[in-house]
Image (cartoon, rainbow, N blue to C red; front, side):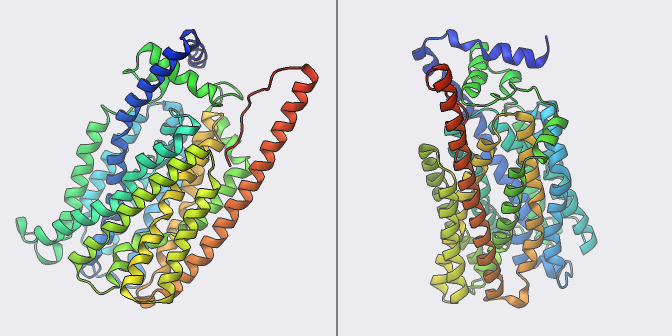
Amino acid sequence: MSLADEKLETTDASPGLSSHSRDDLEKRLVRKLDQRMSIIVLLYTMNNVDRANITSARLAGFEEDLHLQGSQYATLLSITYVGFIIMQVPANMFLHWLERPAILIPWSMVIWGIISILTGLTQNYTQVLLARLLLGFAEAPFFPGIMFLISGWYKRDELAVRVALINFGSVLSTAFGSLFASGVLTGMQGILGQAGWRRDTWLFYLEGGITTIVAINAMFILPSFPHNTKWLTPEERSLAISRLADDGYGRMDGPGTRTSIQGLRDALCDWKVWWFTIFLTIERIALSYGVYFPTLVASMGYDMTVTLMLVIPPSVLATIGAFVFSRYSDRTQKRAMFIIASNALAAVGFIMSFCTMNTAARYISLFLMNQNAGGQMVFWAWIKNTFAREPAKRAVAIAVISGLSSVGSIAGPFLWPLNWGPTYRHSYAICIATLGVATAMIGVMHLHLKWVNAQIERNEQDVKDINELPDPVGFRYLV
């Protein structure tokens, strides 16, 4: 029997349960799954910390230590995303074929943890540029792999909250990274001879080492997919597959019937993939302030330790806001309106910083800018909902949108040159304009999917009228 046949056979195994028993089993299954998936919060934290530690090191004299000039620092921030663009689609296609995210994701973490450690040994611009380039290649499988993994377990009305909970690591990493960096950069000077200009190397040594240890433990905790996760009972495995099928996953062709190459073709031929990719590219330009967040806080005139402490509260509030946005998005089964609302809050923050250098106002503006985190989490839940029906296409769609939109992350760091500071009015003006364009694109997609849903309903009603069938329950796009 083929693997696809096994999956289809298993899908039909759970209907023998009574409705009450099925509900109880489903609650236990989701609770068990949530406990396992919770480690991704820590994985996300380390992912963002290892990529962003260079921004904290900058406050400790990183640029001066390596004699960086002109746009070289911005290039170091951008070069990481080259690996994302090149590797994310092949990595997710490989993951769909391998069907073992519990192996691929932790091993990619081990590799980038080692690269992060080696970054601390760099002595000049060329060496650190190579390290940052390799870091991007190593990190490329992580984000689309995690998104694909989550979409293989949770139903549509569960996704946004889970994406938010799991993505808390990416938001909290700003706070954790700043707190950790503050302790390292002020407390590790002189240890083992790493004094003065080399104190920032401890940041790379310790954070890279922690990432490697966390990754090794994750291999024993992360699930793969419902049909091949060993710690599920047969009853749980059957329910895990059937509940996704009932929710619209795999309705078109059945689960797993398309190959990775077919999924690539399907994704590349769907204009919605390219629309979302262009949207996220523009959005990432608008959100490029994130890689300069400590620098923007420092523009208020505080020293390194106070600056790193002031980074924490906006990140904590962003975490709370992201959970609220995601919870209500799942509850209302709406996506676009929450993305638009979060963009509006970020736009207000940009406008405040553009208009004034008042310390209190600029600090409040940072809280508002960070509220975009909620919209980003809802956006990724929307992506998984929109391409829910075929795993191969979904794997490629997630990777294409995440990978190619990294062009925005490459361009973004160059919008914040030192000679535009400390006001950065030109930078904020660009962010306001790009955020407006991105928000308009979300509105267009919202209207299109509403129209498609109306067409589906009309077609189903016609079938019902002809055949005198009860109301059909078909796939609907979340809007």
